[in-house]
Image (cartoon, rainbow, N blue to C red; front, side, top):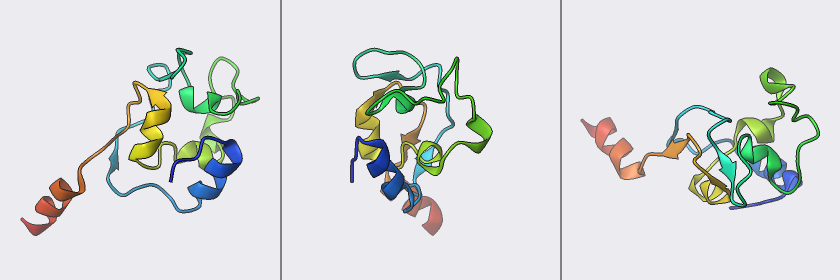
Amino acid sequence: MQNKTKVGRFVNALDGVAFNRRGTCQPDQCETLDGRKGHACCHLDYKCPLLNNGCSIYPVRPLNCRVFPKNQNDLKLVKNCSYYFVPVIEIKKKIVI
């Protein structure tokens, strides 16, 4: 389920992240769909008030920030995200072997 609002993202975050997500957060490389560079997930719906030359609470950031992108659909909300999702069929092949 794709949700663009912070409240909706918080509720969806309770389900956790898709098991096939890979990568690490590289906030300086991502950008919003309208071209704002850096910390794109912090600009969804509105600019996060804790964003000041980077996330001012990164080590203790809220759950909805930690799990973005939680699934493949979330990647449609940003550009150049360093996270990616491995096709499930590839994961199943590795488990069988």
